[in-house]
Image (tube, rainbow, N blue to C red; front, side, top):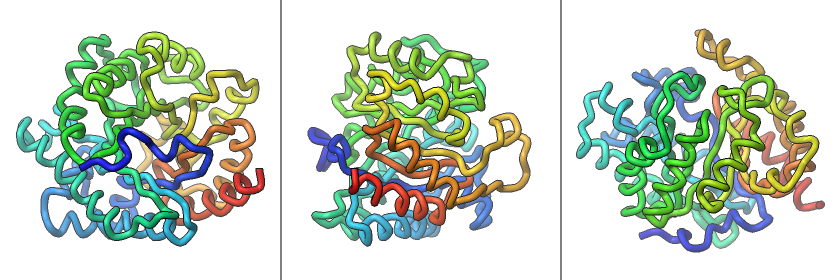
Length: 318
């Protein structure tokens, strides 16, 4: 069963690593076909599980060697009804796939966790629509109903928490937070930002966080930023404020390209891992509550190594 659900260790002041861009690594580096950009079907068959195990093992060892914690995010970002239906999954098979993903994470934790490297299992949730566009939006009640089955499934497993990534409007974020609250499982919410540092709706990150907290009684355990390059949003954070204390996770893209450019790209822009690590270290000075660091699209173990090697000494010296 779950190990840290009632006391998430990443809510301390220590840094936890997480992985990089799972889908872009599998697609561009490993040459694995991912229909609908979905990796969760790999957890449903032996060969796919071994591919996933190899991917996560590299990062788990990285955390273990550095004696820091690690967040095992399940490969379930696309494992919600609309996307799964395109892949031929019905509700029962989809729930089983989500459970299979958690089981795999638990096996990896059993292998690599040490007292110095606690490993938290997080059920990853993705948006109902396209994470880069907010052109089809649900109401809060619709989002609550849509995402509840996946969250309820995670609540019945060894998952310690859920984390929703690439959210681009507040109603979906609120619905997810309320669904997790009802299921009594902690939730992290991660917004994606455009090159101007704002959500695709044009809303500021501060307004989005404040709106979700007001609507849910500050139900999310914490917030994150993902699927944007640090240069896109650093200026939005410079003024600080109480709302920035709610941001505890960062999973940035390797590329400085806009979402529109990434949508059209047929190549992988891996950016500069060293520069990315330096930017993360700079962000620690502004977002001093950051506790989860990893990557998103285009990042791999090289980027996360640089992020770790720039940030861990800086946090230790603070």
